[in-house]
Amino acid sequence: MSLFRPRKSARSDLYPELLAYYCDLIERERGQRWRVQAWAQEVRVGENGDVDQRLCFTVVAECDRLDFVSFHDGVNWNWPQAHQDQVRIEVRTSERHGLGGTRLDITHHWTRGGRIKTFIHLDRPISRGEEFTFVADISWPRKCLPFVRGEGPDSFLVSFSEITSLIEYRIVLPKRWTVNFEHLGLIPGRDDYVLTASVNRDGCPVASLTVRDLPSYRKVGMKLDLSPSAA
Image (tube, rainbow, N blue to C red):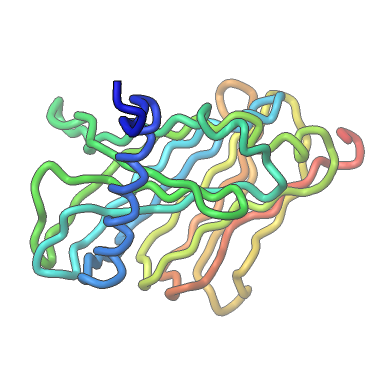
């Protein structure tokens, strides 16, 4: 056996990293451009700090040929890198009238500060002006662990490189929890947004934020903290 033959595990780890590297390169230098038309995100926080997220977003191609789309996600604390392999991401096409809902190939790589970048590979390229809707499910263990322990508030933010027509952000908390929350990055009287609190049919408190016509590169979202009575 050749001493220079790479181990199978090393090769299997290398291929996604190389694919993500070249997708990053193509995105920066070859003009893979798109605009997020609408973004809906629901975050479900478990009592143990585990988080399940669903993203539903529609993009519009702003280049002649769009082969893939990417998005970022991350944590707000020194999350252990040892848990990276436990993060699960699945992306499907949108389902309507029984059509769609099929899985798409994805590639991801981790960047600094506990952030992950995911590339969604389209089954066929789309052309300039064409829309495409994705549904992404993300399971992230212990993502909100300091928050659920009462060690401090947590922030839930989004930002886009172009003007985004509609953003809907919902955070669902465990039953009977009481939290304080407020908006971030938005200016009353200037920005078009609505911030509400409710309880869903399962008895879970829900913080909801709707924003219209968000300017590019503006980070907006919500800051949540356990109320003093719950801490």
